[in-house]
Amino acid sequence: MKPYLDLDELTIKRISGLIEKCEELMLENACFIYNPKLKNEVKFYMVKYSDHWELTVIQNWEKKRDLYKIKDKSLTFDYSEHD
Image: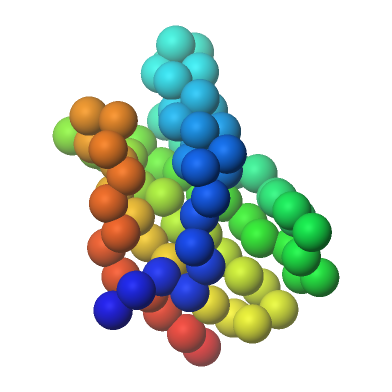
């Protein structure tokens, strides 16, 4: 299985930077909406767990979700869902 939305290097860099800032500010979650030349918005939700961060990428219009784990600055695809 592969993700519905491929994350480009710039998006991955932004996610990593946000997680670093969350760690610095002691925040345990963050979210943002991103629309890089797409017709529908893409929502990113990041939640901190005890040993990793979870990233959920949601394409509302298509009702698709990709879930990733981030541990030691490494982003790993976990699974996808579709309603």
